Length: 335
Image (cartoon, rainbow, N blue to C red; front, side, top):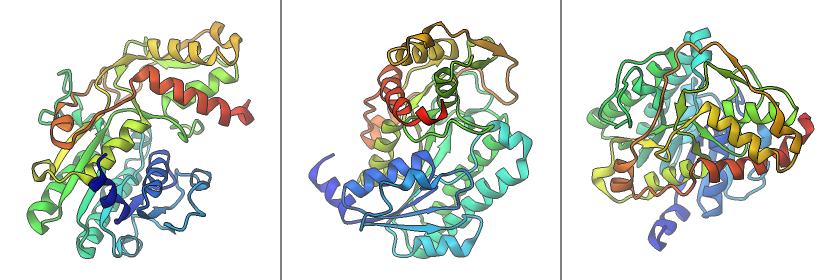
């Protein structure tokens, strides 16, 4: 990042919704380190206060406990803000299948509230977490931003609706937006607990407890697992870009490679066994495939590289090594 880009960050006031989630918390920490004034908002429905421990005492951080389903909370959070990084959402395909109404209320109704509040506050740019689930039943690989299929879950529908609303708010109200289609993000601060825990922290915790992780299906489903630092980098590029062509677009946010679940577990066992040799011999189990899951996911990141200057530094192995070290240091109490 060049000097003028760092100066832009340092002189900006930036709102991060979902600040107590693992992506939001990592964004807050990075932005605060640049000198930016950061406002974090969360209702702790899925985020955790412990994720904010490092930032709550910082002079350039303000926290608002609020819900994006409440328009007044959104207006309060957007006051005098230059940029919004909207991360708040109810993730998880299975959660949306079990409770589509709440997923829609948060991911669509809450998203619309945030757009309205950002518009009313005169925010310069609204950057939001979109999702690779938008590609739906499209079988084409790699996934290219302009070619999507039909969504396979209520969650995927909500994230596609976000993109439609963002496009409409540019055309109707001239609010500049950038959507980032996240691909299976993992890394430090990601919650390993709960019914809807992401696969990597869930498998790590099970392996650390000498339990057999259960892979849904035969393990040949593959994903473009994306380390958190690549995602933080992409969000920063979306803030600082001066390229007008880059605005009001959606971008794949990934590394651009795919790993199947069998390979993933093998890597986790290899890296964790450096701390505990017994983990290497744990047997993996297989269960039924999950409803709404797409078989394969691989992102083309050429558009982001060209228009945003995106340059992901962590492939799956480098990211997992960093993540496993963090998990080992922070999840010991669960063993």
